[in-house]
Image (cartoon, rainbow, N blue to C red; front, side, top):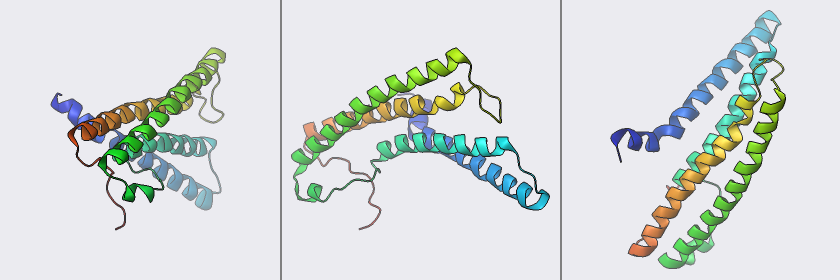
Length: 171
């Protein structure tokens, strides 16, 4: 894999999350100052914050799948051997993959309807397609990360090594 793609694979979600988070915090801070100091606020500020938050959620889901950091109940996993644990992770990824494909299909339908009728946001007057695309983009990235996870788990199962479980938050 070329060096650029390795860097992109490792850091794409992190940098995108950083951009949206900074945009959200700066816009929110400016809007609070405008409201408290000047007794004036804009409609576009609220929309920017709302849509940045939506993108943060969907990109964060993809990053969490990559690091296997989603909230889960894994008490049972501590009592399983390598093989059953890997099989359970593979099963979970396959279920998430099926749900993700369904979600991409239905979310693209929503985007297509919005594009067909030319809907725009109230404050920014920007096509809603840009904001509605957060869901298919997020689920597409989720699918890519799930495929990577499946590949990693299948290799672990084949090689008889411990499956990647992500970093522990608490010991």
